[in-house]
Amino acid sequence: MGYFIFRKILNTLITLFGVITIVFFLFNVLPGDPARMMLDQNENQDQIFAVKKKYGFDQPLLKQYLFYLNDLSPFSYHSNEISHYTSLSSGNYYYQKVFVLKNGSLALKYPYLRRSFAKQDKRVSEILKETLPNTFVLAVASILIAIVFGVILGVFSFIYKDQFIDRVIMVISTIGMSLPSFFSAIIFAWFFGYILHEYTGLNMTGNLYELDDFGEGKVLKLRNLILPAIVLGIRPLAVVSQLMRNSLIDVFSQEFIKTAFSKGLNKKEVIINHALKNSLSPVITAISGWFASMLSGAVFVEYIFGWNGLGKEIVNALNNLDLPVIMGSVLTIATVFIIINVFVDILYKYLDPRIKLN
Image (cartoon, rainbow, N blue to C red; front, side):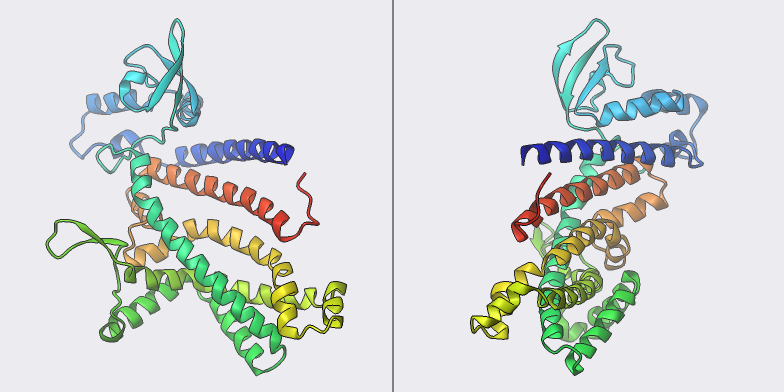
């Protein structure tokens, strides 16, 4: 187990390094001057020069890349020169000095994701802190809907294999997998949030927390979570139901199921006590991928429902060419995806003891 965890951490660091490198060079070859993006239309050359100096935009691209790696690294080097980009006195870093050198210092710090171009120099980490929890809540709610109803539909589809119920579930699953999320979001928001609003009490748009009637504090509005969670969960639900059905068919052909039947157990008992757990491996694989992709796939769903999450923030950042926010969001999603994959590998061992972690 120790070697497995070490190897996974090493692979994670290598993967993150590759993602960071691709993201940096991809967004830095895009047209546009970041310094001009941060200023209004009345900027002059002195202001542009000052901004470039402050954020390191006046340096060669390779040096900017090294600055970026230094910003993201929890253990980093910082110049003693106050005007230098990496200076600890710039107020950009939350740090603890470890070693003091002749021309600089080595420090432990939180990764620095730069500052937003479009939000008055606001830290990207603060933007993510405000929006990521909302997207996480939405993704968890969606995946729970997909798991619970997907497994139930998959079991029913298996029990009534090749019968009317099985065919109906397959048709519904096919439609669910085929519909784009943004199209489903528009339909659900219009139908349940507008046409049937009087009966459902649901709104077309809304956030997890909203101001109370007196404007003095925020109140939890869980009903605003219902429509976006259902829409975001439709496609993984359809996938889970089909995976569950096919996995049960495969498990029922194995010898230990025949042994269970020979002991006098009925089909319901065999499914619940023996087949269900052994059929979950492909479902867990799909769910792990879907959960991470929901953080990025929620972009259009959040934007349509007005949900104040990471997806909506990415759309706004793309409209404003706010590169630090886009880059920080992509890196965050990639990190979550990698962590989930490691967690799923460990979960496999619990679901199937035959799997060895090496």
